[in-house]
Image 1 (cartoon, rainbow, N blue to C red):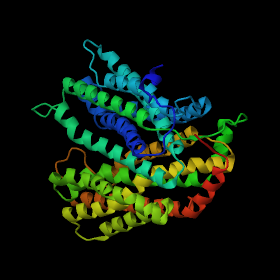
Image 2: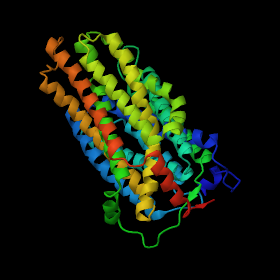
Image 3: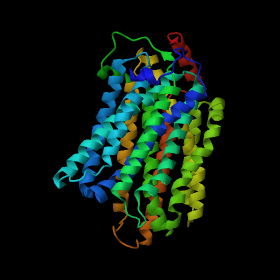
Length: 463
């Protein structure tokens, strides 16, 4: 079999080590590098190369996102129903579907010579929706993988940290590499640039998926419950899982706040600060701050716990965004500096959040007696996708309410001020809600998590 050829010769499972962390980072790097390319540039390809109208693309994206939400849950159930193979329960999906994923990803950016005009939009529908389905087939098992690599809280924090590093590295790579390839000397996008870029990123993604499979190991084996309940029963039990509700709603509010301020960032610099030259710097400081937090996240978690660390990060970000909101005549430099400081708090949450999801999966087993990694993770992923959809709408609605004039060279001063206040106000409100939800709804404190892990340890078999 193909998996036998790329798996390690030794059959024994080694103790958790640096290879696991690096391999897990490669998994998200492989997913994120192509997903970011698609998210950032596919609309431009459709409108400027394939010749599809912006309105038609917008409808396509909405339909695809709705289908993605359904596909996430279906994939989670499939993974749980099929169970483990000798290569593990989750690792095989990453390589089995990783190669088809990037092949379809390349097709998304392919301008087929002689394709009739009336076939271009159907071609976009088929390739983009298929890409989303294959991405789900890779990403849902990959996200669930951390819960069976280790049950040690510190090791799970390390996996969450390295996953965040892989994602940020992918975003930075796409940010700097893709424009150099897809734009020509005159600043226009080209079909040749898109296909070349897609092929290069496909190769990088494929290698990353192989490294994820080779370097990681599934160490936690759970006994299969022959009388496993159906999806409806699992959903009912999830509604009783405070930890799941807490981390899902907190992620929704956190991402809603983060993505809204990101989408309005360009307007803040253009219409409030009247300084577009600093837009890129203003957009990058949060990512830089997250990198600065990574070396200290593990130490913070060891001292106070995962829940406690995310509450700390949320409260810190809320305070800094609040200061930014009330400062009169906020300058661009002050905005950038304070955004970096706020990013230390948001970066702490983003670094740890995936470890919380692994703990939620354990807690679901603790209260229900069943192991549903794929289903739990897919429903958590659904909450994040809903936040992406909502945040996109909030930005457009905010501009409309404030009287933003599309196509106008200069906006009224009140519009720029309104955009700045709206973005920062949403950030304050979103991160405040995130902090309160993590504090009062999410119930796996450091002490409680230790108790749950001790109870589960009696039922588990380590291999």
